[in-house]
Length: 175
Image (cartoon, rainbow, N blue to C red; front, top):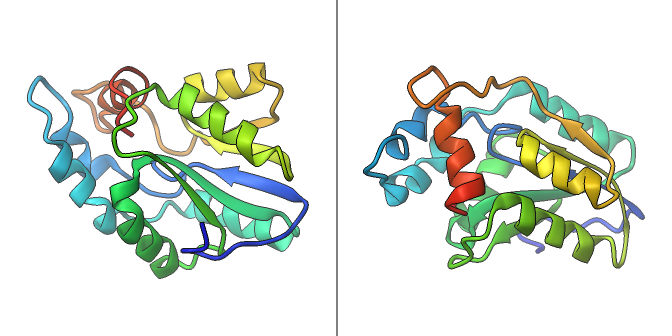
């Protein structure tokens, strides 16, 4: 990418954004239920609070000398807002890998494909993600994974809207 810097470290920490670094709970109501408002959901990325645990993980990886790659299911059209958000929250510089705007494949497919591309030139030390299906697919493909479990994944009617987010990531290919 280069929008948020590029590092030449031989080993990469690959970090998800939504649910790992960014608290998306305030926007989940846009995609819960039968009438989903994807424009409003993605328009809200700039207002996401940072998750302190995720920021600490990103800073620790950078301090340890790992290159940082932010691997997100957000569509490419959110790039400028995402780069601005990463910078505003003091996250380390790194490459930003996003979903193509028209790509509706499940997050587990998109992210494992991206990990394979990344590992062609550098070693992926680990993937930090909150999506169990992404973690399982990446582990099955031979990548070391770490689960971000600090933001609870509840049901769509619950506090986090986790079912809505899971459906967006794995069924609808939207986040």
